[in-house]
Amino acid sequence: MGESDIVPVVLFRLGGLEITTTTLTTMAIVGLLALVTWLLSRRLHLQPGRLQTLAEGAVMAMEDAVRAVAPDHVKLLLPFIASLWIFLVTANLSGLIPGVHSPTRDLSATTALAILVFLSVHWFGIRSQGIRRYLRHYLAPSPILLPFHLLSEITRTVALAVRLFGNIMSLELTAMLVLLVAGFLAPIPILMLHIVEALVQAYIFGMLALIYVAGGLQSQQLRAEAQDKPGCEGQP
Image (cartoon, rainbow, N blue to C red; front, side):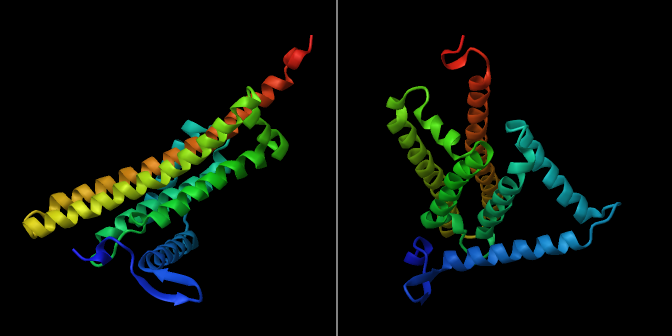
């Protein structure tokens, strides 16, 4: 087991920017998904074939998941959450390709995804409620809780990044160790374990992102409705 099996290899540099195997794999996945999306959207029919039916079924399943958590914000959240799920499933499963490691086994990649979720929570909240009303919730129910609100934002972002990184890294290392010990005598169970775990981790990350975003939107909405009711904030 070499260092390249754990640490991403630097392929070349563009100025001060290092292009690693993780960067190259991520760019390839994004390009592949863009191409597949373009091809699927070009040939849509009222009577769909198998491929279109499969794609529509996947979109409907993701839409139902978003509706179950945030029924009032399905159109707003579906593009982001669905894109996140599709990317994560593809990235996690890319480790099954010989010689390719999943980008999500790299802490820098999972950190970037966690930061994206962190920024999206605030973006959707500000877009829905306005910046002043959104920032006001950090002072509720008391300004004394402001440090705890900020600490919560940081810790859940770190946990989101570390959880995905740790699970995918351990999954790939476990599969590698088993294959080194047992050779290729038991490839099918390891393959099935990898597929199931990759799908589960993509689902968990996407659901946590959805819950964080929807929680911010709904808490702001409930607080705004409470303030608009007669008798609130000291009114008779």
